[in-house]
Length: 453
Image (cartoon, rainbow, N blue to C red; front, side):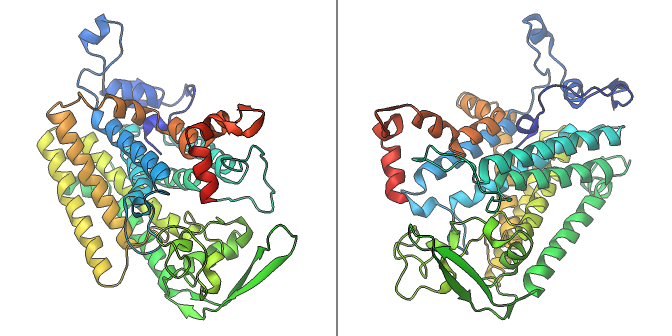
């Protein structure tokens, strides 16, 4: 989710032999580096508060907080208002911006955390440790260990655990972007937009390489016929479905290369069992919401599909690396005009490029994390960041942003408690006589979830 605040480790890693050089001084960890970048003002020191003298960029926290609010709205109202829920396949809805916004801000934060760094080995070790923590946490929360609202049981069969997920994707994207920032940059001085591109040209080479790999695999791999089984009612029996493909370059729900790669590498039993395409018109009479199958529903409608799969994660990494470049703008340019120009221009270009790709057949698709989807969402994220920066940090309009700031600084905690249903499960554990008589059922959440299951 994700920012420096979101990914911040508990405790400090002792690195006596390695340091970061900032303004001629040496500091031994990232926390101290950020403290040196934004030293406390005399006024705050007199009050015993360590706050930056050149005000910290509140817009970053506000952006993350706004994304958290968007996530909560989508999770709570998406089932009631399907129009704001994730697009069933091609297209773009409000919910489809949440994931790329978080990935984008992970990149922005990395551009600040590793601004001045002399000990690459120590920074690499720290980045790997953070990524592993997020990966393990994601598998625990989204691998099937918790069984959702209205089910107080827990535990997961290792033969069916879900390996991929939102936090797992963020962990992978964070690690790759961190390695780019640590190892793939030169010592060129930055004094213009062109020099900024030259300093981080290897990052853009990485973006081009990842995008090329994604496009070649998505449109070049051959997808054969495949099969899957689903259980029949409460019995121990299963029903076998065969999906006919014999296709190459198909970006539909049934025969895309992303799904094939996940089935081959992860195993179909380890994929997400409530596929997004089950809400399409071909698979649901209540489309764009989930519902009963139509009489002529195709065989693939109930097949598992992971929206955070292996191939789509490649483009998620691209979003994170693009966000990293926006963080570089903050690190190397101090004037508002320069920052806004270097944000608005490329952001607008990305949006236009993504829309043109969609018009000419490379559809915007969140489930596949298509190239057009990457461009549009990263461009919108850049425009939104620039707008919030202009309003909050330039004009100082902070009266209505305090809650968003707090949510932005505690994004991971809020995500775990709300989006992963940990808070509802805790509240549901306290009931009267029967588990159905709990706090959630009194306010209608439990009943609503029962109806949608």
